Image (cartoon, rainbow, N blue to C red; front, top):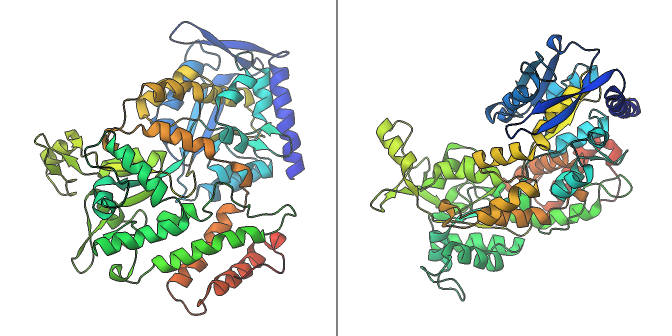
Length: 522
């Protein structure tokens, strides 16, 4: 079945080329600056009776105006696909996006265009569900394949390559490296007297403190654990992280991690060995109560987890705790942390985020207030990424020329990408879009003027996806369950060996094809 789907993907790409040359023609869409772009049109089709179906795990393609932009450029009166209906379906990961789309694709009733995160697209590519978009790019007179490849971040481009064909099957306009965002004023109170810690009020203070933290506290897994102990020792009601999920991104502790799967297609002993320091760190971080824990025991995405971004969280006994740092990617700063940060009023007084039941005037005043500017962003023991939305075309789509038109409007229209980036301020994977933005950026107020885009750009350059496999999410989740049992002292989990033994048993059941005898237990 996989080979058949791959063959169909190749044939689809060839058909798109042929369509533009024989029974098809080239339509054009005129942009605001008067320039035009051509698009393959199949003259045998009445597009007013056709429907392009797009699925995604977020509603961003709709809310950011991408669907409407495509309609304006391609389906409006006088446009190449005039009258075409566009159906957009958003299903969140939590609501079972993969559970819904995989059966649809397998049955041949999948959407024409569909998105996925990195581990999703690895599955889609392996199963042959994505078409070869590289051949479509090569046949399009408006798309310079070599230039596009050079313009996109290498890890983004490489992640969408189908290893069976060596051709591009999926691509993302986003780049999502992560950081450790931390409260600079809290860090100063804990480590301000240590050698080399920047003096308050010095030039580019937040950046200077960030650099010091990178070099002294967040640079290794061992120092990350030590830093947690130092924060708690400095102030018993303070914690470095909200919970141990904040350190999961640093399980490898290196920018050259081992693969979960070795060259023989089996579970990699080197990867297991790499996880052991992380398992030990999580165990040491845990405490049943916050008093006994190195974290605030505030589960990711919970109410207390959000509360501590602002000022503090309150436990069941009414005691307050403060959290210094959160591990989040590019989108986490704008959409998660900043909406929950402390601000200052016109007189410079701290203005905490209002409660849900606060009056509207108070909420409006908070929204209009300036950020306190007391946060920095560090890189951690290793670079990491989190999320990212990739686009691809169904290998069995009956409208490949239309589907490619949508991808073209999203990924290769640089003017549109520049407008989109200016609107959302996010980090994009396209150098020609980001270079002028980074060069002219005046800094993020919430980070005390730090050029976070420059930092993210540098982090993105360090990311290597050659170690990513289709098993990563499943194996990480599986191991995580056993680590949780271990840290909580569940029956049968008294050592790292118990964790790994239980993990291997699950692997034998869930992924028997990768299991091998003789894996390490310590």
